[in-house]
Amino acid sequence: MIEFFSSWAEQIVLAVIIATIIELILPNNKNKKYIQMVIGVYILFNILSPVVANKDLLTSIDEYDLEQYNNTTNSQYVIDQSSMDKRLEKIYLEELENNITKKFEEKGFVISKCTIDAELDTSQKNAGIHLIKVTVEDTANESGINQIKNEIISEYEIDESKIEITIK
Image 1 (cartoon, rainbow, N blue to C red):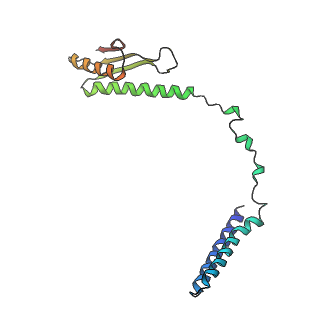
Image 2 (cartoon, rainbow, N blue to C red):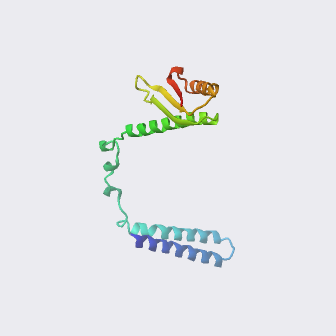
Image 3 (cartoon, one colour):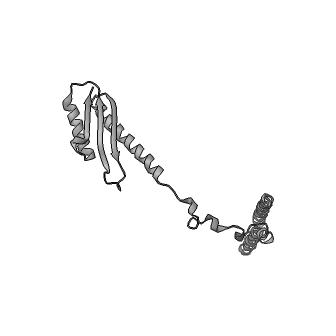
């Protein structure tokens, strides 16, 4: 098959070179456009003739079983979305923890632990954030902690009772 394509390409290149040489030799007269049309037909013939002559080398679409590629008839390719949902839920909770930790660190607090208990599946009855636990290293700035707590309440639209901040 590769030999077929390489010889085909050689024939096309040779036909184009011959056509170019003929066009360079031709004088500029009123017959030039007719000769260019004949040269174009010659190049077109060189492109199509190997395909027509060797059509048995080219595969037919009938040789392929298209039913095996049809997804509607194959039920073996059922996608289980639950594993992807669990990974996305884990990534979301990690980002949530990182965002809360970042809020505290921007105000100068040192966070030793931040955990979030949540159910993100909206089809569940108890979906939402259940509890945010943050452990802050020793600090004397409780007003800053309350300010961050209020930011978290407004940003995530949760009850104040769902946030536990422990000072170590």
